[in-house]
Image (cartoon, rainbow, N blue to C red; front, side, top):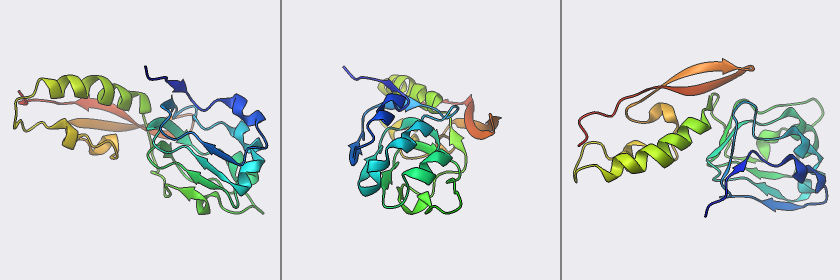
Length: 180
């Protein structure tokens, strides 16, 4: 049974002596508004000498908090490849740029509705694919590449909606025709 985690646990911020934290492929979900990346994780100052791997948590989205730049940036290696991290990298005077340590940079400027993505990938796609005739023009495995953004998927229309100051691509239309 696969466990679903909602956002990154704020309680982990108490583990201030951690040097390495690998949560890759852990099925974390949350965001983009509010962001799934808690500002409280800025207390993980031990990570300056190590790494934070959040990669391939595709349903984990949102912007990187300014607090991360001022306290855990520097020598830190933060991997957000294959997540829904988005927006501009925060900067603060006197601190090294977080972008230098960020694997998966540059981030898409517009966030993605990670919940809609989950419904399309986990619920709709398997059901549609199982009903396709061999050789169908609607091969969703190709048309809906898991590393591509929703706005590039065949048959999916998105619109940008601004919520709490964050631009989010939301699914506004779905057209799957002549696939059977």
